[in-house]
Amino acid sequence: MSIERFIGVDLAWRDEAGSAPANETGVAALDRRGIVLEAGWTRGVAATVDWVQEVAGDRSALLFVDAPLVVENVTGQRVCEQQVGQCYGRWKVSANTTNQASPRRAGVTLLARLQECGWTYHDGRGGPPVDGRLVSECYPYTTLVGVEELGYDVQRPRYKRKPRRMPVAQWRGERAAACDDLIGRLGRLAAADPPMILDSHPLTAGLAALPAPIDDAAYKHREDLIDAVLCAWTAALWYRHGQSRCQVLGAAGDPATAAATVIAPTRPGQRITTAVRTGAPR
Image (cartoon, rainbow, N blue to C red; front, side, top):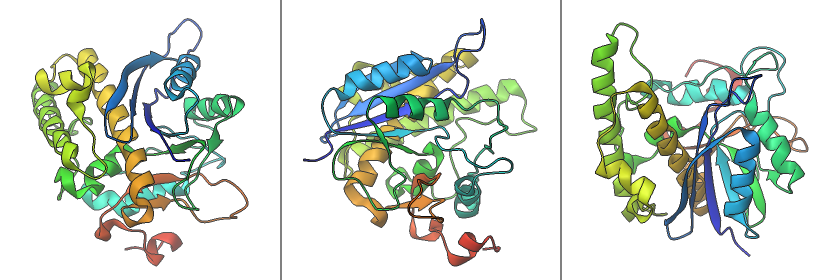
């Protein structure tokens, strides 16, 4: 057997809270040819699990989620989050801090629900899976700067976080331009190994056909889908190339216990070093 579906979820960290609905979650699924089989949005962990179950069907699948899935540290930052900054900080990529005091841990709930449905957490320390229904954590920013085909050689694209001193009106225009440039670069992956063909689904084809909106809500709607597609393709890259093009952040610890890891595409200059593993300066 082999993995037949590569699924990406850009999970909203806030699930339903009282009368407040969950934020939108972007979702996407690819096959081994790079065809976008399904794409769209869900709201809430339950709806996201239902979508994943439906798109996977009875096939083997690898699901990559942009959200913390395993959070065992009481305080501070997870090791995998520390290593994101240590390995990719030169490209202005860092990770948010997550611990057991963090109020928004929808990823932990998602993993538990998926495990109830027969999915297995895959921390990546043994290399890519051969088959089964597995779920791992990823971080799209590491994909953007860790994949040479996308050309972000100096720093991450500014399609998300506003620079501290930039006026909001100026930022919205620059954000939209950066997003449109990113979509153009994602189009290059149609010729990559593995491929991803954006125009193979109406919603992802629309990313290239329409300019990025200026309005914040409309922009976030679009951004969630972009990140879901990146998650799905990162799963395919890990399955296809393993450690030759990716690395497992947070991999230290007892091999008999599942580790809180992030599977991240990497260039040679971004790989974990002995200094990173021990916390020393690079």
